[in-house]
Image 1 (cartoon, rainbow, N blue to C red):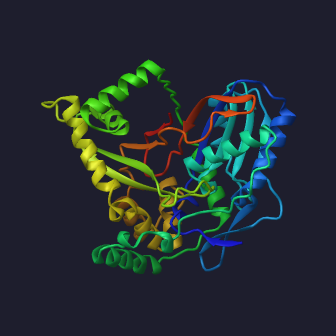
Image 2 (cartoon, rainbow, N blue to C red; image 1 turned 90 degrees about the horizontal axis):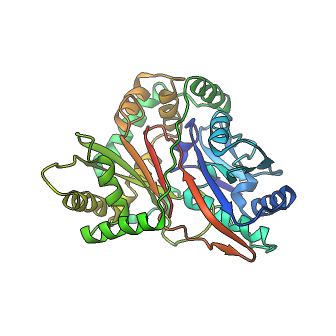
Length: 382
């Protein structure tokens, strides 16, 4: 197995690529039961039995790994404590470490590097884990990621953007440096010596959610559009909002980073009602979501940048590396001082079963990664 890391290459040298989910279930299995189910579930997914290599050419690949280093531990740390500890512990993706599991007082916690998959992927792993906990033998699933050749033809870049990529790649070629995992190690350690994530968890009870859905329906918008409008109404400026989007065209349930993204810019109009503002936000989102040329633009564009330039963007952001060419591109693409105001991932209704024999899922908490081009990151799951 050998699969190129192309559209998701920007995740390789990002120092904050941890996706977290906490699952609360209706019973308390022993650690041995949980550990056995975890190992069994990891064996099902090809990506969790691979590792990442960076070749001398600068290209990076997933290749088969001869041993699994994904781990499951018993801990007395809370969810907040686990995040505080683990955001400072770099995932050893070069050894095949993509996933960490914990049996904690707050529930069963799963932490995954974004190169191990997107938010949907972690949901699908949890489904596999729950099936294994119930004694099932799930079929093995191959790694699925998005390469440039996988993207819809309708998403091809206009000439101007092709020329811009050519220009930036040419500028970078004069200063080019191929980075290695030692650079990532030093960048990660230096960054987390000075940074700390603040976590806030909001739970909407059924009546609150029903009320939000009612208001969204009456406004003729999606729940995501309505929530965004509510978040920005008191900001007093035009907001730059990024939204992670599922890039699966065939609705597969395989693990792998198959996410894309869009962005919208909007200033809340105080002269209009919440519903009117929500409809304006919704229209901007739908324009991007319903047309492949917008939906997959970020993957097309970033996928065609020189691989080591994509690494340099993240290393510029972390303060580890600086060059004239990469700093200019980093500033333009949001890896510099000006980052997105909000970055939102809404997994919508979790499309996995809630019941597995005698075991049922009672609650899921979802915390997306704090990517380099954003500072306020919001994860939503229903």
